[in-house]
Image (cartoon, rainbow, N blue to C red; front, side):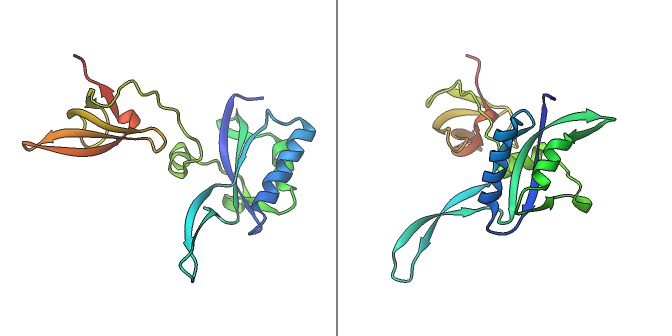
Length: 184
């Protein structure tokens, strides 16, 4: 199959997201379609709920109730990216699925910007600087500023850099890939 892949959104009955995910995964395994249906996600977040008695509890909550994200292998046909008929059939005929998100239920892949915004795929950024290193800002509104790395948080993709602005040292947060080690 193709080396190109795209994320699609499928609409499900509310509350059936995990069942749909499990059912699709079983069909993919049974029919050996791992090369066509690559990944299935139900995006969730951890939320702290406060009960009436003041008790707190960590709860996993779905970010998009009624929706499941599916990464499919696609191929280019006449300038358009299309999934295989088998993948479409398996997903569309899974119990609990009402259709693909798109005009007239025609599958439309998410753009790279949408995928990044949703945080569905974590990009691995190689960090070649440490706390105390002198670095340059290479992207964003503070491009071409320099400063010293104060903290690095790889899990949240953030780095704090002390930058000298207007004669004062100011801490600024950046994504890990917006910074590079300055030439010595």
